[in-house]
Amino acid sequence: MDHSIATLTEARVCTIPRERMEGLAEKHPRIAQTFWWTQLVDEGVLRAWIVSMGRRNAIERISHLVCELYLRMRSVGIADGDRCRMPLTQTVLADALGLTPIHVNRVLRKLREAKVMELHGGELVVHDPARLASIAGFDDNYLHRRLSRAA
Image 1 (cartoon, rainbow, N blue to C red):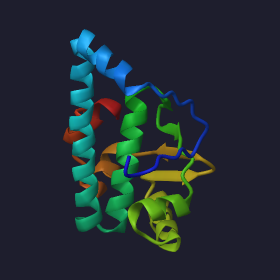
Image 2 (image 1 turned 180 degrees about the vertical axis):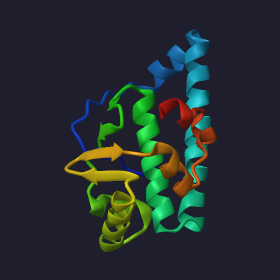
Image 3 (image 1 turned 90 degrees about the horizontal axis):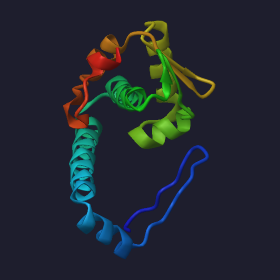
Image 4 (image 1 turned 45 degrees about the horizontal axis):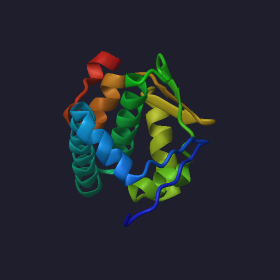
């Protein structure tokens, strides 16, 4: 790999030898299809991130990332209504979005004061998903899901 992977929380990781995966994909075409579909979604996410970094201002970048993470958590059932666990520090957000921690702090305060969302103590609360998506210019087509289903 040309990169490394790290987790922010405890995780269980399994490695499967390449030969085993190739055998499974060959024997079960639906597995190969799922990998292909997952790769298409990953490429969509990559394109969205490139646009985000190049065209969005700080509030749009943060809102877009929060929309994506919130929607993904809702779609797999690990969000409880408008809340979900989100162990992202302002420093981690800043690094991921090409911003300074101070700027992230200001933007999060602005979103909190506007009663759109809050991020504190490892918890995200999205008060107004539609408004957050509007601020972000969020179009979830690249995730093959609909934000309206999560709202």
